[in-house]
Amino acid sequence: MTGAGSLDPVPETPPPQTSSLRARLSALVREVGKFGVVGTVAFAVDLAIFNVLLQLDVETLLAKTGSTVVATTVAFTGNRFWTWRHREHHNMARQYATFFFLNAAGLGIGLACLTISHYGLGQFWPALQSPLADNVSGLLVGGVLGTLFRFWSYRRFVFRAADAAEPVSPAPDTTDPGLAPLPHM
Image (cartoon, rainbow, N blue to C red; front, side, top):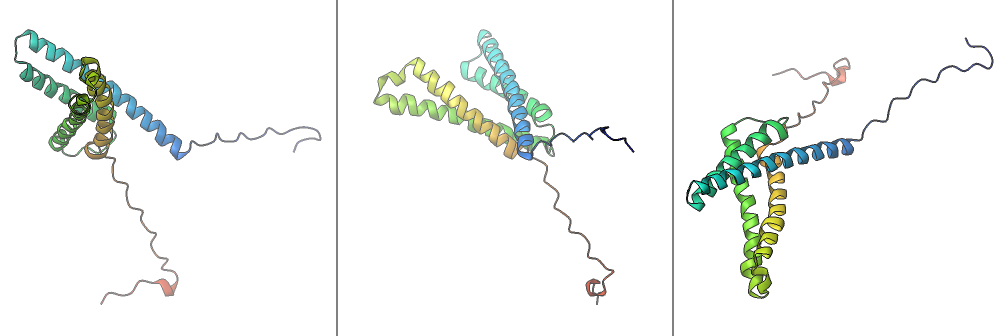
């Protein structure tokens, strides 16, 4: 008992719980950040290997093919073991093949942007056939669209979320004779 005029301490109220949407958005931001770091490292690896191979007088397309394969492997490893390590990982060979295919599709998006700008629109506006316009359409626009596609497709098809377990319905109450299970015949 407390005396007149004294105040009991007020119990602490629990902090408000983070909404599901807020938690999911926060997780998505972390994934995007990790994806960006992995992509930056893979880009640096691609650039370095490509230029080293060119200095060794390796043919240009062969050098780019080799640097792309190594950079794609670096990106796959980083994304599998860091960005989406909390997701399903069943068949590494299948994941890598799907990752490589979707990476090529992302590259195709960048090439499509460059083709439309340089060869399509460039026929009407010659300024779109300049090196600056090619960099803007191929690297900037195509790079952004290709990266968005890669993030979405890797997340959706390569590093899928674990399937949520189906909710189990509660067993019927067998204390009520009207709900007792039927005997097997």
